Image 1 (cartoon, rainbow, N blue to C red):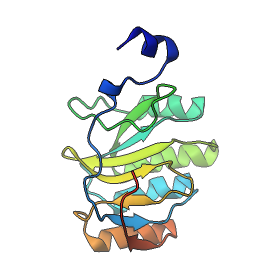
Image 2: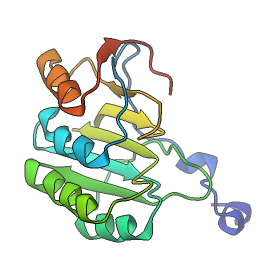
Image 3: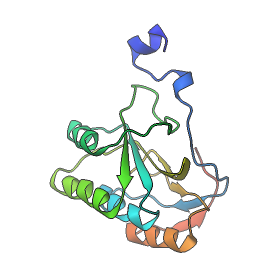
Image 4: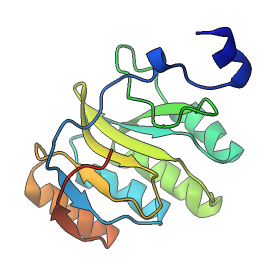
Length: 168
């Protein structure tokens, strides 16, 4: 890390690399702004040995909560989406229970900005990638995920499903 990145608080180029969605024609899902609904729907998409990655939370109560429930993910580095200021990052085991808890927390203590970027990965492979989460940007899901599961997930979000090029 250079003296400039330490002083200015940005992520240096060498630390930005990591795993990302590799599909060139992934499933494309229209976005939702309903954070609790999204978090509750995640277990419909992937098996329970998956991990949800939340980056660049916008509010201290969200960062404190995610800090308590996140795990250390040795050897798994997600490609950083936000480079300045240096984002906070959380890896949360993805199960029905571990997703219901933050959804309930957010029902009681809503967040204007839950996170800027969200990914879901399993066995070192990104299966969901969402840059600019909870905005107008679509979610992208790997074609490796069963279409029926992707459809169920999109329906739970109240979103539409299509196919298309990944923008990021």
